[in-house]
Length: 529
Ligand code: FAD
Image 1: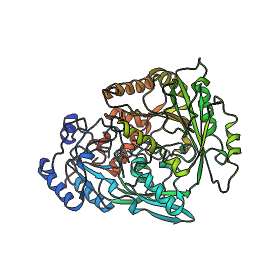
Image 2: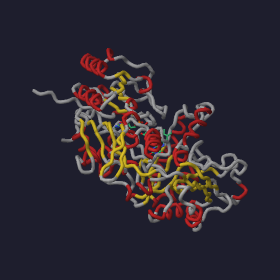
Image 3: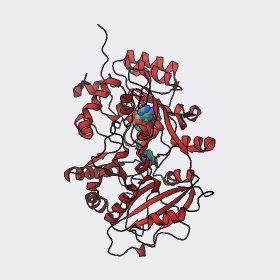
Image 4: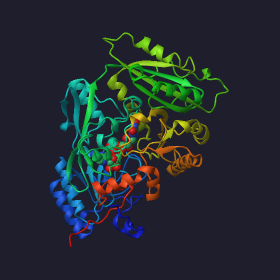
């Protein structure tokens, strides 16, 4: 059965729009009678959450007030809420992780928001199966909590990360979860052994690559469309003690990209553990603004005089890291030296630091503290994340980094390659066709207007970038996509769109889950005659 699409007038009546609106949370009593009664039953059984917080997100550009926010303590709370919502004609339900989306993806205007943080580290458990170790963690646990718990208690940790760790397990598994380890281990969605999912009919399932595999893969990268992740089983490996963290600078994109691709293609046994990089403006005033920057020793800052005057408007920083145990391994400098020798970076601008593994993974925390102090954390974040095929990345550099963005974006412009072979085509996430593709993350951190540019100007610049990719025929996908029409979503998923629609009709037949993604419209359930 295909999802039936409602005409636009019906959509407007059934699904409150998630466009900016006046603040103020409507009470359950303001909803139509039947829904108000259902909402009251939910509120009787599940602890109330913060509806004002649930009406906003990190992006700061969309507000949409739910009828209620709830804090489920268990998977059965989640199931009960979804079952009640499914029995209504119009209620929707959004799982909210840490609300770090930028376009209202975790909102449910006029519906129910489940604050998944309500079940956090308290529920973590180490499981051993056939000699391998796994962490069973709730969908609402932060990756930072998983790291702390695993390292402190067992000296074990997951292998695939995001740059920033205050994101929930359920939130990143609904998207992908990418950082500098993805070239080696795949994204976070390639590093899950089992999940507990409450589907759109309120049933709770355990799924894995062997048990209900279609549900398992549908949910991974599934933008919250097919079920709420209440538990995930994450493979754990012994945590390294130390990280050798190196940063080098390139003047020419072609050399930067060729070296980065060479590094991600090295045999696993002989490769770095982390490869990332970013573009930055060639200006003494803004020497390096990548988040992941190695802590440069005091007094030895970036010396722009080493950059030849004929260099272009944009330079590139490659960052690599190698794990080691300083008690056992005194070969790290020799191994790093051998791996760096063939690279064509500008000599004399390299920096290296030895840091603890946990400190390395928590590196964006420093940037968060600075951004909170200068007001840019609370300002709107019109971010754009793209996956661009290696075939087109030189053109992208020419048109976008050296063209549209030659003056920078007031924040990191990440650009680094990954291997398609590490992404499982059975998951729901859409990626470019080519064997190597780049993450391009334009992480704008401007001060609030009028100190910084108006957010609309930056949104328009994002649109120009996407239009540029389209008009040049680049093979690209939005990562953390946000579209508004069915046509755009169908184009985003391409040949996999029929599979996405079919999975939706199977796992969430009334399309009540994750309405903030604006992919499907709520369908009334069919009453028995
Ligand atoms: P939310 O924003 O709350 O939710 C996102 C979507 O997932 C929504 O549709 C929601 O309904 C759904 N969802 C949430 N929880 C569940 C659940 N338990 N079950 C089912 N669906 C659920 N991403 C990267 O890949 N790599 C990075 O390095 C990275 N760094 C970031 C740094 C910052 C400062 C920020 C703000 C974001 C970053 N992101 C990164 C993006 C981030 O992964 C996504 O925005 C993610 O969705 C946010 O996680 P969250 O837990 O806050 O989810």
